[in-house]
Length: 124
Image 1 (tube, rainbow, N blue to C red):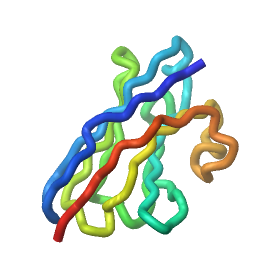
Image 2 (cartoon, one colour):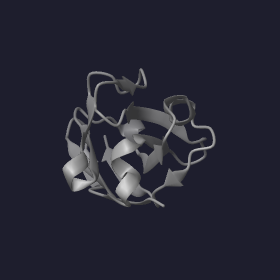
Image 3 (spheres, one colour):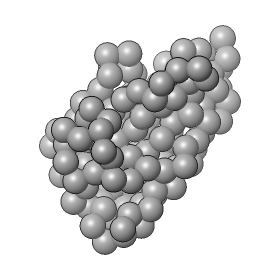
Image 4 (spheres, helix red, strand yellow):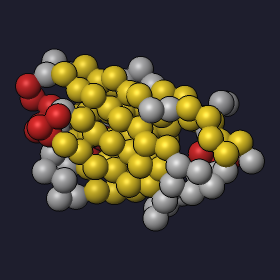
């Protein structure tokens, strides 16, 4: 069993930065693929980024490439999302997710664990 708790959300002006954290409980977390999704008001939840258990592979949605960076520290059971050059369209609730299978997490299907979400608001 893995529990995920996000933090670090807030309000920022366009062009600013935020760093989200996802703290996980559970011994198996270090072997899980983890990632971030987001959901804006009136829109479906969408993939943002993912990272393998050993950090050797990452993937990003086109909309956030070169602005967002995912990283993880398995010793601390924590995944991070550094968000730079934020835009108004990045406003959403951001969710941390974990799954043993890369493809499941990458396409957002049958993901085993979700966090409760943290709000990010970017004002223009």
